Image (cartoon, rainbow, N blue to C red; front, top):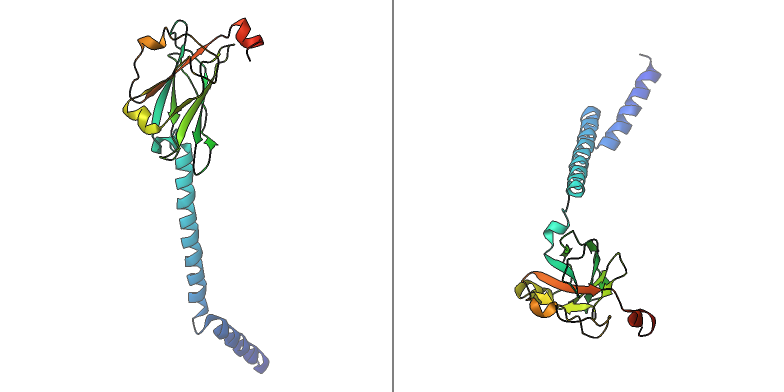
Length: 193
């Protein structure tokens, strides 16, 4: 090696020593690679956990308490299928709508509960046919529904008035809210409201 090549090699070694703080260059590179591998490993574990959580059916709603909503015809008591059930949380800290559910062939929908303890739940139902909800939106607390059940009053203020012949024969079932619908009369749909 010539004197200039030796001098250049010493300069490179001096710069390398400055940036590696006295570590061997090979050890420095392996240390950086180890940190990168550790980061990528943690990232892969996190992504795998996210994919597994999101790919599991009901993974988020399984953690929330649920209750059932039964939708019946107010005139004949028949279960109503494919009715959209929209729960609404009312009160502090804020009012918000929860994800809607649809009734099955037995007229039953499972609704996840996300309201606060002090909030009331109002349930609005929207049948696919020309029927409407009887009485007002059903206002209740989750504790009431779970402990004693809830039976809406089809003749209450708010929605269309419905007869109580069917509702008088029923009793509330713990964990279940019962809501009534019926087709409005000509008067109810054109004049009353």
